[in-house]
Image (tube, rainbow, N blue to C red; front, side, top):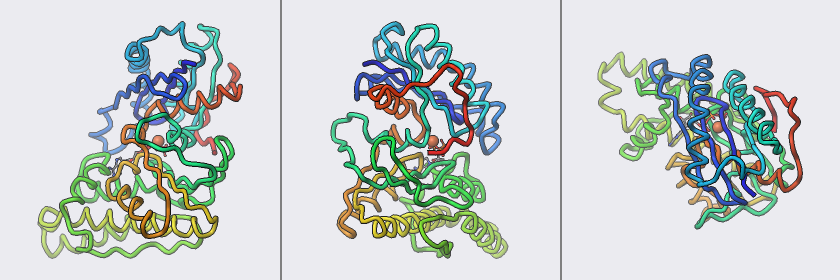
Length: 335
Ligand code: ATP
Ligand code: FE
């Protein structure tokens, strides 16, 4: 079974062809245009998707070495995401499926981040049900109890900013480019994680909060820069290491609680921030420390990609779970 997956929820235009569980191609066109604005500009994003989508899909088919007539279904991201961006992928997928007279499959982007673990990939084990998935990305921070492919329940989530925003907004305060997550990660490796202390937010239960941390970092930097105008340059790696250490501590604390409350020791992460080397290491350490079995996705399946949409498409195809032509993009689609 050949499925084409299309992802256009935010600022990456992506297409992927999957043959049964195996990825044959995984093409992503990043939109550089947002860097100078320090964040994604929705109108520019949808325009760039319109320009990219045809060449990206062509390339995905070419790399997979198949023609569009050989496809069995088209899977696309229905939501959540930016409406203008979602509309480009949704309309394109609908037209292509209609033109080829093959089924259309709608995919929830956040389920994609979770079910990316079910891509057949050498050296990567698939989590057994039930497992806990922590989705940490630019727009979400959730702990999800995954009972089966399409039976999942959000048991904790952020009440304000997402963890990716915590990285990106901290980076902005430090004058780093957008998105700052990868740069903070790189610098954190060179710094002392205990150089500076930031208090962790106190949120009961399995929910998260990151907006207070961002403010704490802002005030801290403002105070230090007053005393030493070169504070940021002098201590950038230590600051990055300390911020990352604090964020990882928050995430691991909540995972520990979730594991205790549910009695589930199989723990997976997904979403852009799961590319972070510190969180990957902390999760691995959890195997020894807390008796977890952990599942960390292959790097290329962490940030937005269409392979994760294609695998969900394949799993839905097996269940004959198809969308109608009148399906609508949904910016706030829930799991
Ligand atoms: P969502 O999936 O919630 O709709 P999104 O699709 O915009 O949001 P992703 O592409 O999944 O988000 O993730 C992007 C985020 O991941 C950005 O905030 C970016 O800074 C962060 N990120 C990427 N790599 C790293 C890294 N190595 N360390 C920390 N953060 C990272
Ligand atoms: Fe995402």
